[in-house]
Length: 114
Image (tube, rainbow, N blue to C red):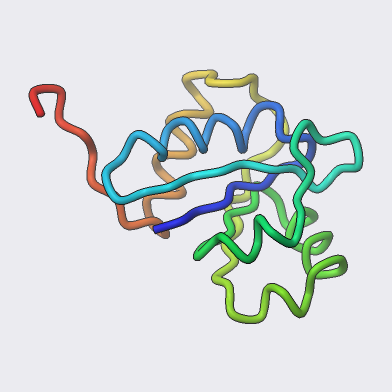
């Protein structure tokens, strides 16, 4: 499963999600941002690659739809409603991402003894 996580500037929420889920078997994860000054701006290639696009806020979904509407027709688009109030890999953010994205993303946790 290929998942693209999207936030504003791709500095905290989406890179955190990418790191968390990329460790899981069967998951390929990437992150990008919708803002012009994003560390990794969303491009059409990102969307073509992704099976699921997970945005952190409704505003991110609107920006993606405005800019890439036709490219998103066959893509599952999910909003987690996580505000820009967390730092990269902040434990509270990690917990939120695992709880909210887990409902939409079929993953298996890697066991420590595996």
